[in-house]
Amino acid sequence: MTHSPTGGPPSRGPLLLPVLLTVQFLVSLDMSVVNIALPDMGADLGFAPESLTWVVNAYALAFGGLLMLGGKLADLVGRRRTLVAGFVVFGAASLVGGLAQSPGQLIAARAVQGAGAAALAPVALALITVHYAAGPARARALGLWGASGALGGAVGIMAGGLLTDWVGWRSVMLINVPVVLVALAASRSGIPADRRTATAARLDVAGALLVTAGTSVLVLGLVRTETHGWGSAATVGTLAAAAVLLVAFCAVERRGERRDCGPLLRLGLLAHRPVLSANVFALLMSSGQFAAFYFTSLYLQDVMAYGPTRAGAAFLPFCAGVVVGTVVATRTVGRVGARALLVAGGLLGAAGFAWFALAVEAGGTFVGSVLGPSLVASVGIGMCFVPLGTAATSGVAAGETGMASGLLNTSRQLGGSIGLAVLVTVASSATGADGGPGALAEGYAAAFGVAAVLLVGAAVGAGVLHGGRARPAETATSEETSKNLGERVDPAVSRSTQG
Image (cartoon, rainbow, N blue to C red):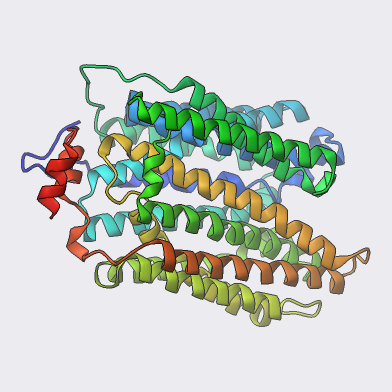
């Protein structure tokens, strides 16, 4: 890795940002692209009705469970190595999934895809933090990073409909292969080579096993609530086991931190208020955002009788709104600060979801029930990505950017899984036994209402937890600059230079 002679961020090539945006886009795309193709997958491969959801759940389990490990590996073995390995695993799994001849093969391929994505996702944010100086350059990069993730989720639904209708369900898996090949080629020149270090840090094996098992079991318990119910022995037992594993993980990490043994997650990161605020915000925002994608898709197809292609096209306004919100945040974050943007974006997103709750009905129209709420919610969500990435990595050492990025991505993934599980239950309770369009619309409206409450909670949390607004030029302290050069700064020296 080549460092700037002035002591600033390492030098970067013109292909760095396109590769990182491709990572974020692909990871988000594959969380949503298969949803509309599920019926065709089930019919072609002979899935039992109760096992079809595992095409989605297998990806979510592997992705959510391995994110912290992926972030730590990037810090230990190198970001480019981790990125290349993630691309290879992700692309190979996509190819196998596209050629699958049985349900088991497809589910296994989706799990391996999730593992590859868990290696890719933390690297993108970490490389942006290291290679873009605090200020307008980093704000623009973070804005594009956040927008590419949101667009990947929305485009995934749209592309899933188009590809399934016109080419067949296998294309939703195989389309990743050429994209990965191009990204791999660009990575060779676009991503700086990893620095050689004199000493090799060790991997926190106990922490890695505990957090992977704990988050995987937690996601498993959540995704099965639709079939087992929240009060069932299976759900209660699974969630209790997850809690025990995660508490044990925290204990192991605390002990490792005291002994300076390189923990998988340095819990002291969460004592930094911007980092804590960003992760709480990501958890709550994703809880509402992911579920909103799901229920909007169902409303368009089950109530308004849209076909897959038409339903996918209906998400275009959401894509446009995210871009608008991101541009607004990129241009204003230096003046108003991260906290103000998170609060404003969260409240605007909540207003959009509340509008959905009032507008969805059996006789609804695209203009009256979908267009307006989509634009308001998406602009609000788009405003949050720049300050979210800024806060999540604020003051974090270069050697811990993968750790911080893995933590943020884990918060987003767990938030999405928790929110979807809870809001599916809310929608089902409001719908009742009647499966007609009116009852379905009532259930979806209830879910959107709860999503709005979650976004309000995110905004309030940002206002309370984030702390005082930093000066625009204050993002890179002398401590951060030194750590970007791979140095360890003595805390007393750091405090004196900042005081």
